[in-house]
Image (cartoon, rainbow, N blue to C red; front, side):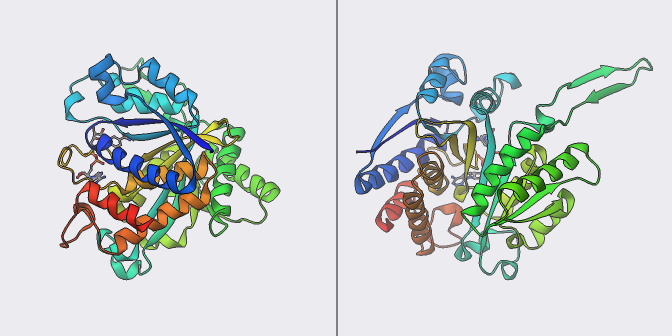
Length: 366
Ligand code: NAD
């Protein structure tokens, strides 16, 4: 029986609540597909600070390295907000995890079912068929990591801060390869977003993406767009995109804009894929909901588990090569939600169900 070896890092507040349901869905799928779930649970974030004094204990890193993927919940919350910024759960756990495993490709599906179009701040006549696009963000390069990064007092007494935006051709090539793979699984349409009218890094970005696609992916219809225009086009007509790929800071901003126009954070999953291959020769990856720990609703059993369940589906697709099984989970989530089973964040006046009942409906739809 094929075994799926991964590490579960549930984290804080609603993290463990939605993770329990994702594991239940995975358990159901595994039984049906004759797969064995072989996962280890480890502490991360605030929970790890409370138990081990650090947000990312060595034992957790070791557990992650021993698996083929990480299924992540979310970390942080008011309980740890008074800690120095460097020790806060998100900064001290998630960023080092991304760095440690060189998780350079962040894949965020922007999905809004037509039946949920009320959740979007966009007018529903602009998105009659809902929203179905994918953002691919470069995650380990660019201005967030470039050196030097300094603040200095100048001889004239003024203060100057400096960040460095830097990209290598090889970094752009590998994120383009990830974007091409995503585009091939969809409409074979890729838009590369940059600021090539102003930035040197964007000039290299545009040329590298164009050269890569011409050489390795002539089947992909490639277009280019400046980031300021992309921000506007996302709000005007999101479905003109299918897959878009962009550098770290632009992707940070555009992916959040995309999340907002897609309505509830409780529905949005994400995958961060690494440079290293797992024991199956597929990308090692970290899979997590787009939202945070939602302390305002934690402990009430009302959090939407869909994003965590859809993150588990992405894990099956990218790190285990089980595309058909992933698609079955995605279809079951869609079926359950569009048939009317909804948690409070997507209920819009209908009676809302709790976290467990939402997962029950998804399992029934499977
Ligand atoms: P949040 O995403 O946790 O919550 C924003 C709003 O969305 C809240 O009203 C919340 O109830 C709602 N929401 C989010 N997920 C939901 C779900 N599954 N079901 C129903 N409603 C949901 O953002 P925040 O309030 O800004 O952050 C709370 C904490 O989470 C902070 O400590 C922040 O640092 C942390 N955080 C962690 C991650 C991560 O671990 N990747 C990401 C973002 C925020």
